[in-house]
Each structure stands twice: as structure tokens, then as C-alpha cells.
Length: 214
Image (cartoon, rainbow, N blue to C red; front, side, top):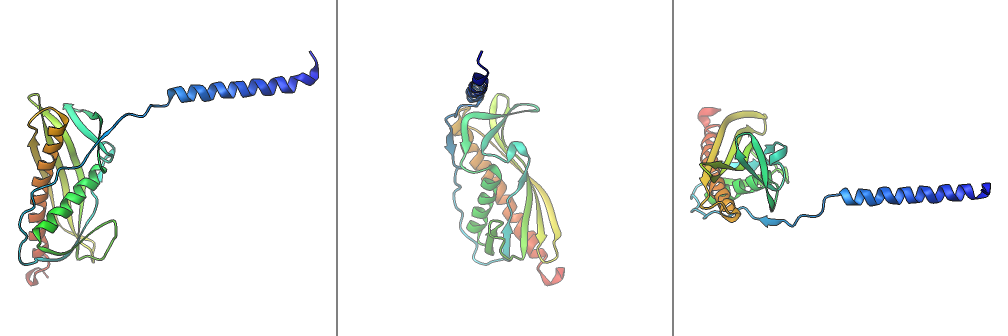
């Protein structure tokens, strides 16, 4: 063999090896899965209260674990096994959906004069901080039900002191095992939880801004 041909042969061999690796990498990459995107169903808006009870409130996005922090629709088909509905997802990550549903509920209620979220970090008298413990479909007797669980803390922003804390849970059975019915049950459960959070927040916030509490 002519020694002058060796570098070219090695270069060609290296290029072929690199192309083979690239082809192999392409074959093991996951293919795109078609995803149906669902909005969290909207609530029926109640009538607003006539008089504000709190001056301003900032609602923070709930903290969440790995399986609840994304946009996949989580299902627990049996005890201690977590899965997701194939080919479906939420329009936003679950913590954002919950925060926005709380904002909608407070706006509809009308007893907080000024509302904001952690997206803007505007000054507020109180902040609603929380941990999202559940936002999933769970099976009971072969039927799914939506479960929303939230550990909430009401924080006085000037002192950063927690003035009240409470755990909330709301459940709503789905009318059918089909995914659209399951999604609808998430909307019902979220509405129930948001209504309880609004009542608790307004009551505790007013108690810690009254002259008797100072």
C-alpha cells in the first residue's frame, strides 16, 4: 500500500464512523407524539361582593414536585403508581393553571381590592404562597375522579411572617372514563378548591389587618 494513501483512508474511515453514529442517534431519538391540548374548564362566575375586605394580595405560583410541575395530565390508576394520559396535555403547567384559577376566583369574588401574581412581583399587603400536593385523576371503584390538593400559607409581605396556613382538598368524580369527562372533573374540583381558598384568605387576611390584631 502506498503510505501516502493512509491519511486519506483514515479520514474516510473516521467520516464513515461518524455518520454511522449520527444515524444511530437519530434512530433512538423519540418521535414526536401528537398531543391534544386541554384548557382547564372555566367556572360559572359568581356575583362579586359589594365591599372590599382586603387591600392587596399577590398570588404566587404553587411549588410542585416533578410529576406535577409539567403539562401532562397525571393519572394514578392504582395505589402508588403514577402515570399520564397518552397524547394529551394541559395548555399550561399545572401550577400555573391552579394559580390562574385562584386569580379568577378572587376577581369574581371582589373582596380583594387589588390582585397581582408573582409574574410581576408588585407590592402587596399579603401573599398567598402554596405547595401543590395533588392535581391528578385517581381511580375509585373503576371510575376516575379529579383530586386537587393545596397546602396554603398567607404571608404578611412587609414582615415575611406567615399569619395563617391550611391544607385544602377538593374532589370531583368524572361522568365517564373518557378523557374529556376527566378534564371536566378537573375544572369542577379546581372551582371547589378555589372557592374555599378565597373564603379562608379573606377571613384570615381581614383578621390580621383589623385594629384588634395589631
